[in-house]
Image (cartoon, rainbow, N blue to C red):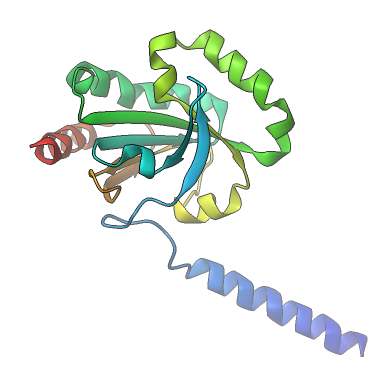
Length: 181
């Protein structure tokens, strides 16, 4: 009896791992960005991708605090090029486990203190389960940031991870310009 149970559990684990390895939910170009709710540092509750509808948007997702330097390699050129446009939006999204949600007030206030007030509308903190987002974003390394370019309908037009490389940044800037026409 115990042998049958152990065999069944072992087979279940193998099947689950194979299913996860073939997960069709990994995001790709053309997919609608998945729903994500959070609060901007400006204290406004928003839902992505709805908050981005009607604007070309860049979302930069980070799972670790140490990724800020990577995030900045993207945001600085984006702000330089598109900050005056009303039809462009970028949002940094720190992804924080729901384990820390009881500290959200302190965490968010700490971020508010370290980020210039005009940029508070560009940072949305997410507190909640992370596993499905690890799958969606195909997270292999939590020390990398994950960037998504969305069209005005919230569909992914470009995705990459890590710090900006000159060729990827050039492609991103060109795609944004085309989408803004």
